[in-house]
Length: 465
Ligand code: NAD
Ligand code: UDX
Image (cartoon, rainbow, N blue to C red; front, side, top):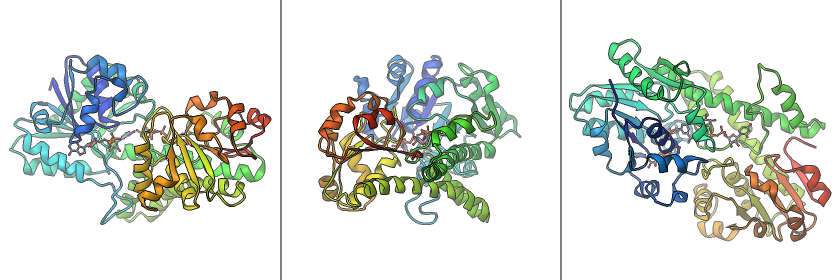
């Protein structure tokens, strides 16, 4: 089947960039990205490209290129479904916050809503593509809903998980390590559906990088890929604590083990802990699925990755408190960075939120500077934890637009995100504006420790004594 019209439900961090790239690379295909969130759609349509809802290097140019030609953003979900030959589901699948599986299982209510809406709005056969990250065997439920609530039209379900990382989404989409497409490999219709999605990607990805599997392997591979990546971060972070007790240096250890081609150098950067909307949610989901099949040891094994991450965030906060003579009450602590990594405005599950919460519990005054995160977003994140009243959060946590103001008068600085610009600050000026002794807690091992120590700072780096 030759695809000429695509609809993508969900205009978020995945739907927006992914569809922008498909539109740019396939000028012969009309791409409509739809969402129920009017403000988000308005932002995607904003003529000021600085106001796009997702910050990703290079994304503004791609959107500017394709928007209004073959890329459209709209809230008219039904119309876009009706027109499309292929419908991507790219809605959020967060951890459940209620009921059975609370705190672990993925909340699939938005997926089910999409399936029902696709069934109701369709007046022709369609290929439905799971772009969201989903528990293995979700396609079974999606197919059941489509087949039983639709108007008699045929639906093929594909799984096409997205492997982009935020901050590098555009380059990851333009030059992916692989594209994964799961489908019904046992039927001609299934194979035809797989081939039509392969043809779309083949406009810019070489065919040997496009893998086809059965649906269940594809769904499970996405959870597995994230679990493996997060496991590497927790593994190196666990060793960072051992380094601090033994005078080994985590940077040297990472470099030494990463040179082994079987291990490889990537994802061995010790940090204050991983964040982001995917790692924790997907591992918790893997744990939940394993337990639901009675696989206790499998579940316990993966759960440890999360426990280690929580420990790493907690011990960073405790280190700050201990170094400030066991009391931070009423003291100004400067945070540089709030996003979960550099080059994104996304803050979901950012380590900064948990470290701040810990310090606020101790009565600290936390002042934050992040080049891409708004004050409103920071308050939303901290309020979401429900640790104290909104009024208290606004008394204790402040955001500033100027990093030098954030550091002025502070007892300590904590680096929570590895934004490049932090390296270039005039650290002499900052030193002279702070309370003495000046302490820096570098949660990303970003800054030049020796240089800072020469200025007079006391520097704590992860995994170094
Ligand atoms: P997001 O929250 O940024 O975007 C999801 C969007 O879907 C929201 O704008 C929401 O309003 C919209 N939506 C929800 N229900 C809807 C409905 N019924 N109709 C129309 N719109 C609806 O989420 P995201 O980060 O883009 O993630 C989407 C999926 O992709 C998740 O399953 C996630 O696990 C997966 N994923 C995310 C990343 C990432 O880096 N963020 C990477 C790979 C995979
Ligand atoms: C991740 C996966 O990498 C991506 O393939 C998937 O599609 C979505 O989830 P993302 O969460 O956007 O992407 O960013 P990633 O680069 O994986 O970083 C996740 C977290 O781990 C960040 O907080 C990052 O700072 C941290 N991290 C990463 C480390 O602490 N050390 C590392 O060596 C690598």
